[in-house]
Length: 307
Image (cartoon, rainbow, N blue to C red; front, side, top):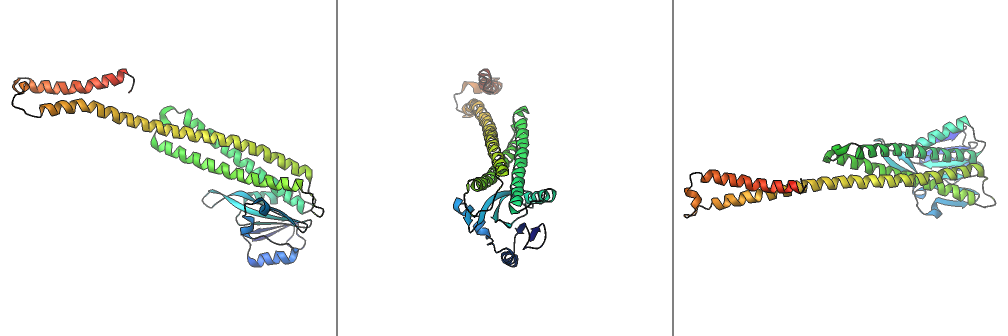
């Protein structure tokens, strides 16, 4: 899909957005703008020299952005930007809400040039990342309340497994948001520090504001990641406590059962010279002895506060 702003004429468009472009669409953009359109494997590179380059008066930068699949799972979408003094190209291979928000920003405050459209996109990316961190914080707070304020209601295997899955999903989401923020931060820092003679002009005031927002959100994400790690440790601790309770119960049951089994085994040997065999109440005596031998360990465990 090929989207152009503010007109459909590619030769005069300020921003051309390529979403899962076909070979024909890439060729149309190349002929209309004389700009090289990066391929998917090129914008997926992780080396800084591959993500941040300047060639022939044009910036070639890329960053991962958090997106959602059809089943509402978060994942990283690699986005490439080609910024020249005349036009901005964005290349992506998935739908992203941040780009829809950037188009709304362009409609509300039309950019005068390609750099203005690029700033709208960066601001939208930062805004979506901030929203994601806010939602993650709310879910983290909810998990904390459920874990620590509901007493023993959390210490059951199904609830613990569900809590562990939620904590894991939350940790993965915050990690993806951090990757996206770091990518945007690298782009902004690169553009602010660039000193190429024929480079497109950038608005340093707005770029610096984006840089400061990214720095503050990165610090907040680090705080949130520490909190998520604490919840993960707490959940694993509750699981260990539950396992210890199960082991303790089995240990008490085994210890309590040993004396009765021993007594029953002794009186079940049926030797000829066993005085109890001739007693009138020998059977009752053996049963009472078995019961007492089971109760004594229970009382001892109770006194030691082991149960």
